[in-house]
Length: 366
Image: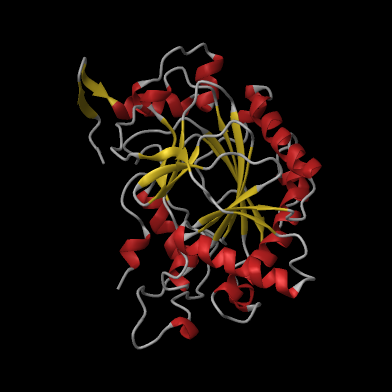
């Protein structure tokens, strides 16, 4: 990571990166503000060098799509689904779910609510712009803007929805009602997913929920404007998620990709589906039986792309509860691979490290 304010750039001697970052941040308009102002080129602060990683032959592979219909009523079907989740979570760290119980109308309205927020009058939107992570709602562009080697071509809003549910008037009016409704739906789905993941680990169905894995929920909604030079930047740098589990709603633009066998594989949008991926904390407590995979989002000429990522974590909320590899999963041949940590400690470490570097999880490995 480059910490100097003076960076030598071919054709741009003495590029003052820190000043450029400050100027961008002080607009409080994000990447969308650049496009609204008529930008036809990607500013230097967003330049991202090629990662040198190849693409899986054909670009797209068989990211598992798992049908959750009847899993709470049909024992045979549930057993099959648990097996598929076990395989997907161990190999890919990603899968998509359909018939998940959240109505299509709710999914569509949630995406529309995201568009309403980002496309409202900029002066109204600026009221939510902050870098104070303790606030209930945090809207900005790049949480690690002043630490990352390159900025990402996206704007993000972060809302803590559980365990302390915010009052309606604490949420942006443009998407307030649907965010409350959607969060409640995702919390129910999360409880079910943690049951199935517990069974995939040969544990009691309530094990992960009883541990507190589904206690917290943070909703992050992203806006990726159309990019005039997508080859020069990324929508989201390569990273893994810092939570227990992520449930992602994406529109039909595409761009999400997962690192599989050291090659990028596209995760194409599937109508009505939600993308589920294992987070670092779930890999830690499962002692590597479940995989938190690196993923990224490519920038695109078409857009905007919008998505809503629901993170099951209590994040920065103070907590002294320790999480380590689950005792029932430890054997003489497979001892603990990670030291214990709190969700708070891990979240702070992840945020300090930022995106694009080495895995934050590896810093907790024994």
